[in-house]
Length: 256
Image (cartoon, rainbow, N blue to C red):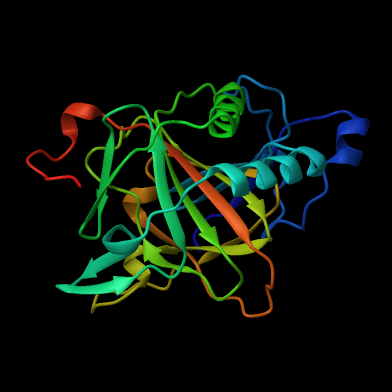
């Protein structure tokens, strides 16, 4: 990889004791570390950067609250079934290797891989998590895509969240609850073709209660995936909060 930098907020000794994470892929040099000022809540953030990749990562919820939120979502969230639980790939229909559903403001819809998902009304727990993300980041969100992975066999393949109805000025905020899973970024130029470049992938471990911000232009240049991890035996719920621009949504689509 041409460049990978991890930057940390300066924090107190107490915060340092509370903030436990794995060693970053590459330690930042002294002159690469700086205090981040763009966030509205002073929680300890890590900055991940590479060519065209800009992400921020933090623990948003402690274990007690993360456990509580996970259990509440297990009670409240109703996942899609039938055709809405399938994807269209090159004209063929495939079952999604996980459970998924969308919630958000009235009338919002998200379209990808041949499916068109209308948002269900916010639940109290989803509103709480959304508001916590807004408080931490300063960004507002009107939509969330929820994926539930029952264990390490459930997964999601390489893709980019670059649909035209998404507001490009707003990051995608990914909240993880439950099992710790690997999250892999791969640059579009490192995938296939005669112009394939040697750009190393970026791997993160998304912890229980964590928040990952995928800032512009990450989804322009980098694909991301949650690969199969057979040793993982417990479930994970991932919530990706987005801001949809309503007048950019596809029209003329018949909803059930």
